[in-house]
Image 1: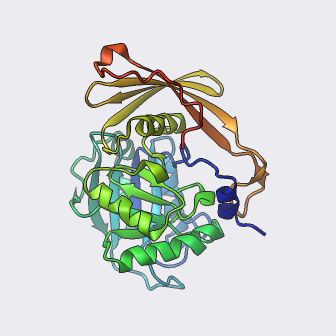
Image 2: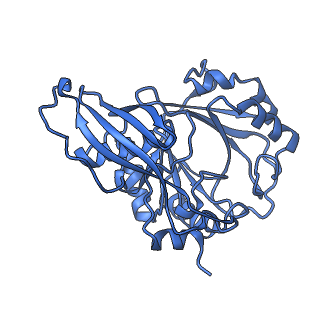
Length: 318
């Protein structure tokens, strides 16, 4: 029986517009085994996990558990936990780091302010290498364990100090998946070689469009539109583009993509169903997942770009 990741590759399913959505990420170190719903199915107190989920709901802040690569059969409890807070808005992205002796201390944070990009000087600024988060939760999907764990281990063994396993990034069928912070770009179908290239690019303030699923700050139509523009103009500066989307119909959006230098593009994004029906996860029932097809329409004549970008991109953004 084919795994969800194998079938997705065979169908050449586009990666664009599939990143998990989160303006700000709260990452809590939790060693040991994780269940499918890790915040309430791990060595973390389940009552605290439910309280954290409730506090984050509707704010735009996304919570995940992290642990160092390696064996996790039943790791002993740690006296203190590493915590990262990362905001992913272009031009205002940041990472803060702190340690807590009791994870319940996190309930005192202002989740809404953090989601809006206001860290209030909590913790300290993190100035190290980009954070690489590799999804490895086999209780949620076996592809994440079979493909993600070896990737995380190889990156860590290769000297990338800020590599962590993470509970969930969405898109199991694109395993192995990786999120890179502070910029918030998610990637799929990783190999160790490609992942190392992406981390080197992130150190220089760049992203790699080819394997990118989208920036978590944007909703999925905006993710697809941004990647369509990046593909059209060959732009890899991680902070160069911002998007503004307007929904025109149930499955149709108009998205304006603006460059730091004043250029602007209009992109039409249409949601369709990607057939045939298949499991989006090895543990899920067969469905036809959403697919966001981006068509580049025009460059704003007032943008001063001096370039005509009016040719429509008839192929779905990849």
